[in-house]
Length: 236
Image 1 (cartoon, rainbow, N blue to C red):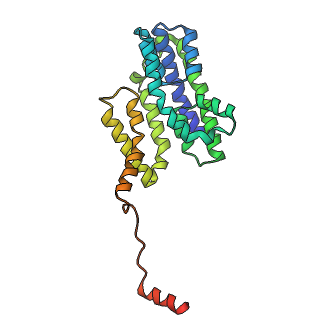
Image 2 (cartoon, rainbow, N blue to C red):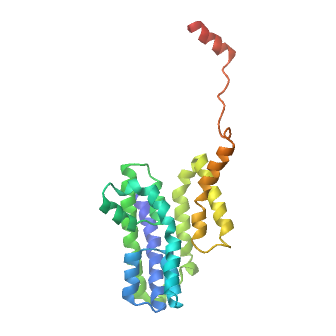
Image 3 (cartoon, rainbow, N blue to C red):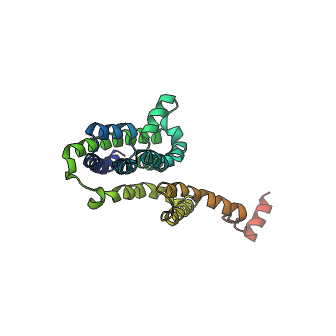
């Protein structure tokens, strides 16, 4: 478990360093870049916010950030029990909630194992992102764009690897593929953030299909051999 988190943390440091460099190059003060990573901890939304602020649209940065991070609402519903029973645990845990932490946690069995996975991943990835941001603001523009280095593909690849075991279940696989198809189709026509939320309709599509076809998916019981029925009658 620790090895998997460290692998994600290495990618997190690299992308965080890129954010720090981009933020400073866009004219953001060093303290503001560090504060954004510590207080907001929003990953891709931070890149978008820096670009919009640099373009002179701080209000648009706030609204776009809220829209993009609205996907954390279902994340919280899925991981509520894994954060802990107390309010302070849930408040702190909600700040550590990211795509990577969610996928890593849900790949573990429910219960104590899932709770340990959440806090391990959440804490280490938060520290990695902020350490990367510090390295980025110190290095200035030497880090460059994460897309040019191929780092933008590191997180999707890691998420897919974490989610693969869950796709062995047929219902989960159908819901995931339906949601992914809806998101891909909607990406060219909807603003950033909305296709991700639209992917949540995948389970709804499966549920509606089952409701309209109640017999679909129900496997009939295999017929009992005649000899077995007679044997049962003789033993009664």
